[in-house]
Length: 180
Image 1 (cartoon, rainbow, N blue to C red):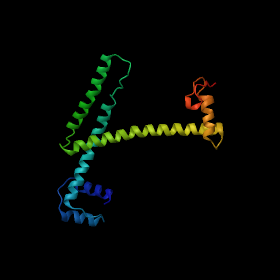
Image 2: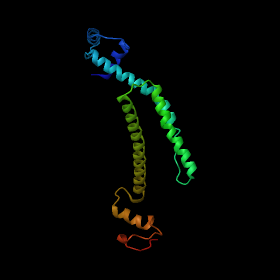
Image 3: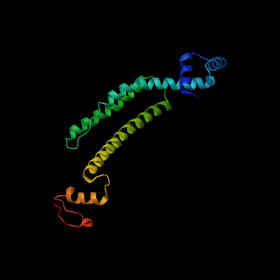
Image 4: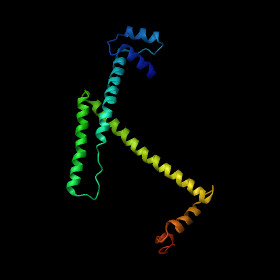
């Protein structure tokens, strides 16, 4: 089934009750795959869910922007205050969802699981992008220094003579030798 066709069917009937005859006529007239009233209701439920989520997201993201990192080297009272402030975000987000009219049941779990997975994916992928950017940049710098064909031996020598300057090498790399 073409999702654009489903959207057109939902837009045309706009939440009104339908019969199989109405759906047959509309779908055949527009050369869409014919759907049943049960499918129509299912698609309509998904559309309502999507609309609720799209309406909630800006407010949820505004609440998430209040999240604060808890520094390691601050006093216990400051840490406690920051933890409590961060915990309050959970309650405010729960209230946003409560006020959205979301039905009780599976939809709650779906909304939060999907949002958590999406945010985790975004943050994880941002880290991967940064690592890839750094690796590509370091590779370009290495090519400038060593030429197109870089060997592990060249990098090993560079590591021992440049990176480890004034450092003691581990036993398996010459043990106790001060480089530099």
